[in-house]
Length: 300
Image (tube, one colour):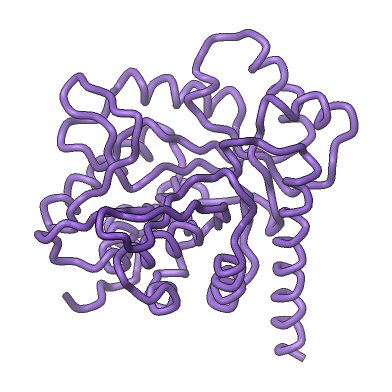
């Protein structure tokens, strides 16, 4: 299908990000006391929304203190935007309460599904890129943005299988979602490397086709390498190792197109000491600074 139009409708809500164009890290319980005791100079903290949907307790006590020191990016994993059924209104209400409580600078969710009827799956599953799916995802995003009163970011997926029925490319599908809903995009560079490697596609070509004018945040993470049943390499979006060299190279290429953007270092499994995350964030900050200098030099 031909490239979708890249013009979005007028925004009803605030711009899709007010995070600084710096590197941030995910908030992990292992690092709470270090962050509070001697706050490091990171651009922002990301929190997973579903970890803070209780009414109170220690998690909220710590997050309330950290909210005074850092901008927050709220990242959801449970809305199941791509599912065939309706959104869970109770879940959406709890999310709206969390947004009101902490007023994060950014909210994002995944282009995936994880529910079927009353069954909840502990995974982010791929969707078929069809007109029917597009209409459903756009309706869900409209409902989310209306309920939250803000513009959300939609994250490109990491996938291991593809649907034969798809009749849109992933980048055109995302561009059309942006056009219909006015949402922004979260471009996960590691997901690009993982998906393109698994499907035999060129990640640079994918990035060159991506609707970068809608990107409000970037993600970086580590992947694991396994073998499929035929013995071919299979990349897994594992979030348990440093960012790989090929993903750093893709990140620098991404910045050439997007310019500096808020960049999260994701590390959710086998969580290392805080110093390791800060070292990864420093690498991202160096790339952001280099791109900013390049662009400033080009304007003089």
